[in-house]
Image 1 (spheres, rainbow, N blue to C red):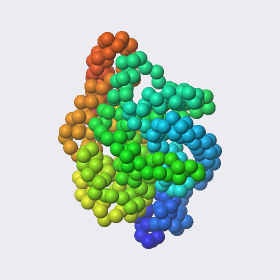
Image 2: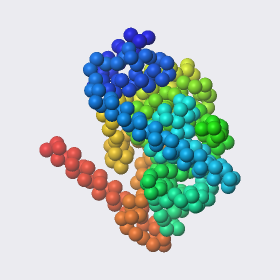
Image 3: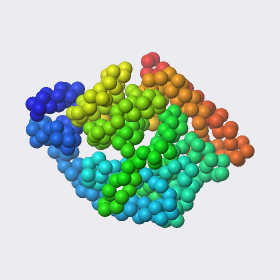
Image 4: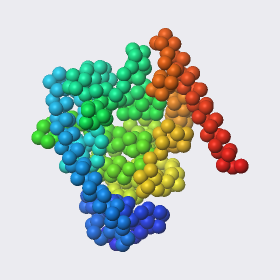
Length: 371
């Protein structure tokens, strides 16, 4: 097995992946028992880059301790008020997947609440001293609750400490989860000696795949999380049914293939039918190269929007994504032109004008390159 893995690693190195990235892949494989990382260490490493990861992990441990204490206090307050809340990503996900809150990197605490409980949840966080990063007028807030998906809260020490979510993605992505069902299917997770609620394995797999796709699969840790969930006992029939309903079979298939290619994930037979979903291998290689360079694609760029459209297998989802993207004003439009609530619908015109301007600038830039 080790010899086979080394051959696979060597082939990927020839495709332009660095030795340091290969070492990280080997360590992730070792975590699921499929490879001894010592046997897979490449012969040429920039050890200075590797040792920087060790220093980063030491800093991460301190963050885990601090954030875990914050999380416990927040969960307790919500329980006392009788509000159901799901701990989403962060240290709870690390505990759920790897049995250790420090086993994955995170930068904030994510909580999922039912859409109807957003106002009360926000009020509780404000009472606890956390400061919202955004403030809205009445019309803006109603529209943001309809088209957005999270409020960000911070403290003096951590400006982006908490993400309070009521959806998984903004509405313009045209991936409409039934978030209320997350709570019905949620599971109990033992975290630091106290029970908390989190997503069940089937929901978690789809959510992690979509989170990775949203960021262009730019981080190896995202693929590692997908590999960790997919290796568990799951109801693949329900996963496929929900993926078809949402129109994200291609996203699921790409995520699983990356888990196999990079981390040697062993997928159950029930999931192999996904690999017949048409997808461009060139895109997968591009994803690997971006991941290797720690390069994130700009989520406000036309290449990103084109990528997100191409990731959908149904034309109706592509068209719905394009329509919602063009017709949904963002915070930038609201801040660019401050309109009273009576004229609020005119922000759609501002949105269309900004997109047309950026499209024209992109076209001029492309034309200039070909001259």
